[in-house]
Image (cartoon, rainbow, N blue to C red):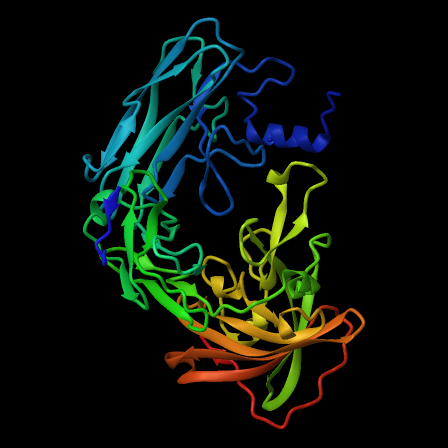
Length: 493
């Protein structure tokens, strides 16, 4: 461990399938009804996002490629497949490597020989990169010989032989991001937690050793250490230790760690990590207001809202919805309430939720939901989670029941945090959000939250802008009464 210096997947052949097979093999090579001769070829498959499908994963819909443009530092795995029955004796094959550019910036394993034996009919060439490469470099692999003369080199067709594979080395995009943007601590001296910095395309350890990637705004004393930088890794783990007691329940404590552009590395997505010790209030978890705003038995469960916002030059309530979820916590969390014991007597599989907090997210995938109707606030916005993680606010609202135990009403807080939104033009913006309001049960089972949301960013808003919101736990609710106040307008990113 190194110390960070801060403070340190019936035999019936359909006509369609048969046609596809005939198309993929030319007439002179494919003999219908006969056994295909043993053959050896490169079997490099690429997914829809232009990343390799790594063996042993399979996808019959993908076609082996003869070239690939590589933009990643991660070890590239090039599979070579032998089509035959299981082998009685081992078979070896040799390949050559042709390099355009610097031959010292990468390593091949194996260097030039592949081995196939028994049911192991795929071997892999691993290409590891040791340093950043220059433009217009390439690596071409070619299958040259095979120990069994009965094995044909290349596919049994004349169009897609796949006996060579070329890797073009394109400009490397090295960036980093925080996978989460907020940690809550208890405030006890010696308290520890770990967080990660993610590198989607990997990093070079030699470049990271002396790179200052953080800037700090500290509200209390703490130390940071990090694990060793490792080859072929996509993250670095940091270890936080609080060095002082911050136990005043009436005081809000916060420190922030921000990623900055450093060297050839660019900060993207979540770039600010908040570490907070909130004001503490006495609350009865059995009030459980958060449970009124999620339903995990319905994967399409939404909450519904209205925003007082500019609509073609006129202020009006504008409706929106968002996927809403609880905050999963551990059993010993101060706000933990049992959600499910999963029908077992084993307490180790019990699921606990935070009784007072909810968030907005998608159940799966790389898209985003419309937290706080933020997609209406902007034009030209990118809505993917990688570019605009701020559209998924996983810890968004916190409830404070009246008298600490009311099951019908109380106050609500927009959890203060920084969110990141990017335009399709790649302009990225860090926006501080905050706000407060009230909640109450306005009819049996129907809850309304009334609150204001503040967004702060000097470049986008010239400071802070405020909007009024209503939010409901059912799509059937009374239309809010029009307000006689100004409202925000859409901002072009």
